[in-house]
Length: 164
Image (cartoon, rainbow, N blue to C red; front, side, top):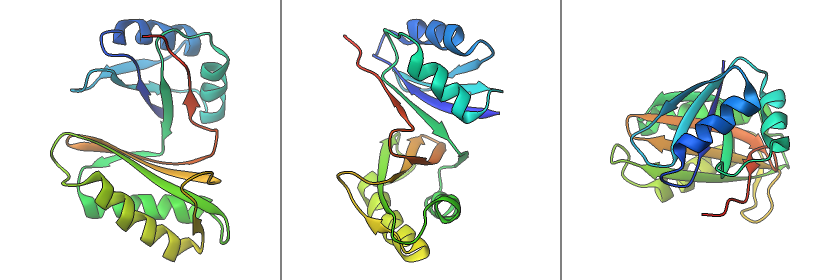
């Protein structure tokens, strides 16, 4: 099952759920403790789900990040899994950036994760850090007790413009 982290304007989560159902067909959507943040599970392959969402005319979906894994919100576990996924995708000499969005209080500092994880990915892959236009993004989406980890190519995550 592909898990997608979906953001929407606060108060428009219901509209975003309908749009996800229309765009993807088979999908199970779960709310989170944070307004405007949803998790969606679909049996569709990653590329197909992202293509459908990219092509769908949406009014309520800001961003969609395809998660590689949901892990317990433990800094060591997050680092371990993110580095392992990055080693499989990011090649020596390629560029990357780490982006961490912290929600809840299970992890002290999102910036701290970005710095430490960036150093580890650089060391383990031989890649270079490029914060402006990297080839790869390492996303860490902290949702209280659970954290989504994703390594995605630039442009792979879906970003939409939504009028609030």
